[in-house]
Amino acid sequence: MKTSTDKVLLAMSGGVDSSVAAYLLQRAGYDVTGVFLCLGSAVAGDHTARGCCSPADQADAYRVADALGINLFVLDASRQFGQIIDYFIGEYARGRTPNPCIHCNTVVKFDRLIARADDLGIRYVATGHHARMVGGAIHRAARKDQSYALFGIAREQLGRILLPIGEVAEKDQVRRIAAELHLPVADKADSQEICFVTGSYVELLRRRHPRALRPGPIVDSRGNVLGRHEGVGRFTIGQRRGLRVATGVPMYVTAIDPATDTVTIGPREEVLAAGLVASGANWHVDGKAPGEEFDAVVQIRYNHAGAPGRVRITGPGTFEVRFAEPVAAVTPGQAAAVYHGQRLLGGGWIDSKLPGSE
Image: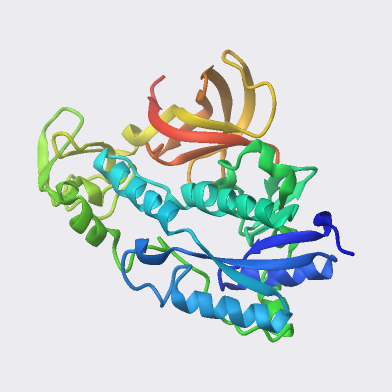
């Protein structure tokens, strides 16, 4: 008889990664049960053409489960996902740039998966993320690494998580496996952008928080008005495109003030930061007490390779990073994921930068 340690509850999104993850788990000897997270009416608009968790994706998940002989059920996550959308809007209201995918991974995916696995007496949970589990710790994947988005997973959950896709090292191997198995999603495009937004997120802001789209001034660091904009919600720190200001040198967004609807821009040196201040920290390791310092590599956005620096724990749930060299576009609202080598130690949410002159 199969025991609970042989069983795994897999989040199946209807995409190629989670579909191949199901096969890899089966091949490794696990008894796989699939679950599709239904976001329900919380999803803003029809996104059947792309994204994740749409009705079309649900149909794809059922087709894959049928092809692999896996039982699949639907789990309603609409209430939790509604909180993700509220967070997304709220961050723009504060002049910050949100990262809803990380919040979704923590609050919707892994928390709900583990709670449901407990109900079913299943030991393990799994997803199709590109990251590796090594000795109960999350490590970077060799390709398409997504470990950055997993820093918020609770430490006590790590020993129950399986990430089979992270062990696939060769480029295009996931799709090759899907094609060899004749899975119905073998040629399906990867999900992109924000899954609950059709087109531009600006339209969501227009409906839910129109103040973020009020016109205002574009100024330099001395307060000189250089132009006008059509809403602070259209901008993020480090942005260069769409400023519509001619100064003779490349200019970047350096600050956003939603209270005055002001966007500040400056040359590249003004967007550099010596470090960052973060809160909402979550650590996967022991000993992160106030006053502790250690060297690490810190990744500050999805496509950032990571920068070496010195991390100092400043209080419960807070830390600072001082980079070895100035880093561009440290963005409030984005995550700072902390690594030792390939291992994810944890991370937090960026509140502010330490100026580049420090």
